[in-house]
Amino acid sequence: MFEKLKKTSELLLGDSESIPEDRKVLLSELSMYIKEKLISSKEVQLVFICTHNSRRSHLAQVWAQAAANYFKIRGIKTYSGGTQKTAFNISAVRALKKAGFKISILEEGKNPKYKVRFAKKSEPSICFSKEYNHKTNPADGFVAIMTCSDADEACPVVEGAHYRTTIKYEDPKKFDGTETEAEIYEERSLQIGREMLYVFKQVASSLSKK
Image (cartoon, rainbow, N blue to C red; front, side):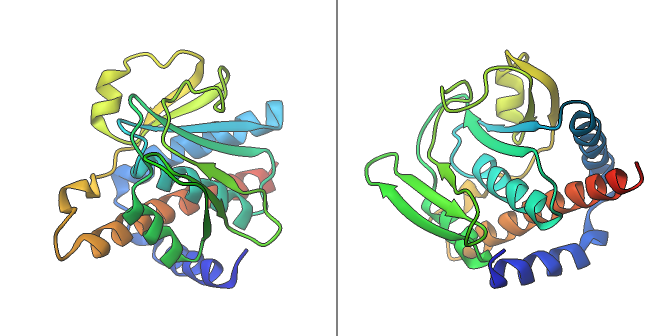
């Protein structure tokens, strides 16, 4: 893992007590499912879903993959999608860079495609806005994690999902164009990172007891 990202992750793990108890319950349920799925099938596919696949779902996809790597948990593959496609928001990209991810652009345009890495030799996440049933995402047997209430309500059924849960995050979009935009995006990125690290710390702990 890149040194800056490792240090960020260590700080977030040290701050896990700031996660509210009701959210820990949701996160622990996800941890338990991941553990059981890893034991039975050796692979878990996580698809984070938000309305536009522009901010929260991408942040969660990237942080979840990095968190699994931090705890050396194999068999985790993360994806994201939306009920609509727009573009991976540049402020979310910048927040991930500030945390220590290495990000480069693969394709320019209205819906740019980015390569996101958490370690020098890691397989990169290819991030761009897409609908959740896009051909690059798994079609069945995956975990659907709804990161916003709008997507949760718009998709009462996510076809192909083996398990579904809702872990909502406040949308940083409402601060776009304000003086606190960068601060809020960083805050949301770190919140998601903290919670994904919490999930995979529990997975690692449970697997070590088997």
